[in-house]
Length: 208
Image (cartoon, rainbow, N blue to C red; front, side, top):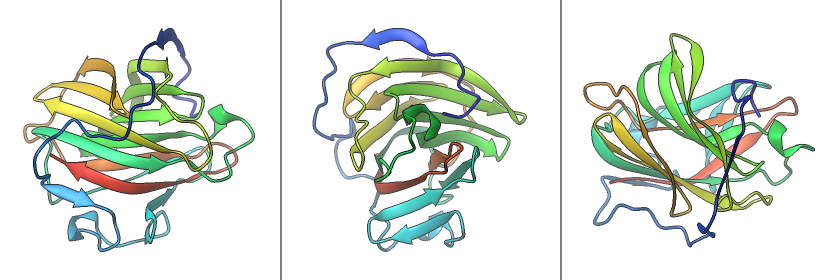
């Protein structure tokens, strides 16, 4: 787990179980992406983010982070829902794999929010403000998170202005508030690597 997340909430969310993957959004999504023929808004592949038959693969630098955003869409009032695949060979310690999830409410590379899960079974909301990390919702244990190799977790934020709700695999984790850009900023995906390095694959992303 990255150093920015040093506080582990002792609250265990009970009764969530592990429901089938199902975004809260209904109707036809604005964007339904499996990355096989990626939307141009994701930009070109590079050494960090590549488009594979299994989805978008993000490889963050050791003890660092990486993200990819889609500049063709905004998150003013939206449901942003992504499916992340756990590494096939996770690091020796679950909390050293780094976190994975959603990039949102971003202004630039030094100012954005993340909604993430970790292989130690926790979920969190964090904010990077002026290049410094702040915990919005500290790491919170949830039985909804799947920690096995190759397991798929659906991570979702439902956003309404400066308010949001985090879901994992269909189960509500928490409500939160923050400072959203006027247009909500672009939707994105986010991944970290621990000291052993990690590659995370995003199999699907939907924006409602």
